[in-house]
Image (cartoon, rainbow, N blue to C red):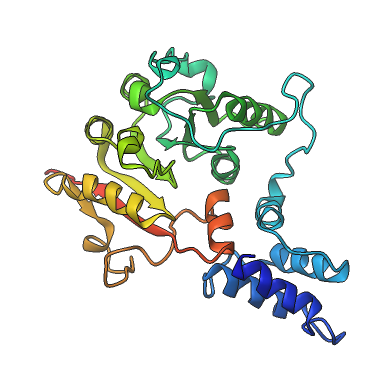
Length: 307
């Protein structure tokens, strides 16, 4: 049993709820300790309400409950179209398979986005899409958001959600970023201002490391297409993967600065990992990992601005 689940079970069933005076704040504090997030906003009233509801009905608080709570404002439909059906996916996909080797067709950006000249954020490995949809809904006039995901069913469902929410500044593509990133972003009319690679598939076995998405050709393509002053945000709950990505981007010191070298308000630990995420909300993988007691390793880079 995971330590986090055990802790919650003890709280719910071992006396933590014995008093009717137990408050949402106490439950919220527990969730916050679970996630190692100190005072960050993730421990919101919704999270507290979620924990309180779980306590009231004597059920275990699970990480999917926290995902639903943090993304509650999206009000995403639980039921999807008959064509999509039930979504079951493989956790890890081999991007070097022949079926993923063909570049994706470049869309008509005028059809994809209401204003294709807005600055663009690309999320490589966008997963379910909730994270990018949340950003798009929060910043409708500021940026466009493009999610690249190698699992077709996730893309189909994300597209369904985008249509349900009537968003015109976010789009998802079934694409292998290792193959299609350059031709996609190089044709986009506006500037590329942010690329995120968040908790990518770890491919633990040494012989499978070549399947990891952050390889030298992709790094070069990101840097080439990123506008001066544009940013790259990487993170993983697997230290080995985080170090591998960090090595790739740290090696580009001639063109990239880490953000703490540019902005003293950006705080890092002694090993150079960001102490908090700059994105405003956690990804689903972050929520699951922190609920289980894992640490998230983050780095953020900015492309040099040449005078």
